[in-house]
Image 1 (cartoon, rainbow, N blue to C red):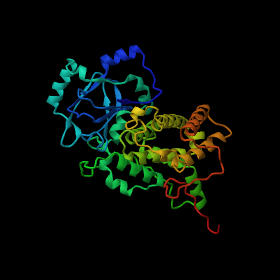
Image 2 (cartoon, rainbow, N blue to C red):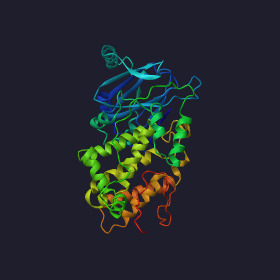
Image 3 (spheres, helix red, strand yellow):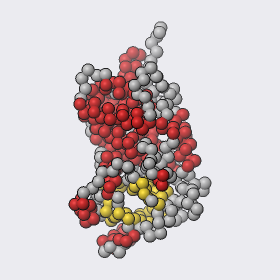
Image 4 (tube, helix red, strand yellow):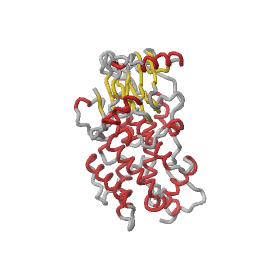
Length: 399
């Protein structure tokens, strides 16, 4: 059983032939039957002969899995990790039955298995990477360089909600996020999931929710928080050496870890970056137009992949809408207010970049068709008071 994006880009035969020769192999030993295993946008239920994936295109990938109970009705928390594959590389992992996770082998064993793979000894037990869905993955990982992954991934590389329990309790939550957290906890945890010690999570950039300056008047502070361009500039300079693509790489890393890896820490980081960018008005129109064209394109493909209502009933429990319920389609989600305000900035500007306008229109149409939102109704003003990313408005003395 496999699941991927619906409108996948087809790969031409020449490129497919090249991947047979230059594609990398992920050899996975002793993975139990019925384990849910995913690579990028593809998800499988492991069968008796499964020993991994071949013809994996070189570049960044996300591997994730959750072990199943014997009945196949309950699953442990998802564990995921990023890797960057080189042409013709063989990556070997073995299932540790006690810890219910994939582990690395000794260098000597890895060399021995790699040579066996190159002699095609495992070939009939390796499933081919679904090249028809590779186009979807490239859209989700276009800024995900090896350096971006190494900068963000946790020590040991594993991302899992099972290690986020103490972090979750501290996270600011709106009603929608509370529902999401409950849903994740209930639907994807085996009753006897192994208890693991809390470990350091991903090395995400700290994104302030609002501008706070001691020596700024109330009116100026309100203006700085209604248009967060100055905050964006300081975050780019301080944390990304001014490199826009590093910010977009972190946005993609967080979305993938959230969507495929089911990490709540990743969701909060994705929300923080999206909220910052959608709260800017000077930057998209004047100072950082190119960044915002790239952001809108990235954001569009994330929503298109992540929140599509799956058409395939077979993939109901493992589809790309893996754990998203109707809460995502309600208007109290943070995206509704921020998107609406952002569209007002772009569509009402006297002069606007053509590419920015085009992607804003595409995004607006996607939100309206996917979520059924009415983004034209200017009379509605929805602000969740529990949302740390809601606009900061300072009351003036005597008002």
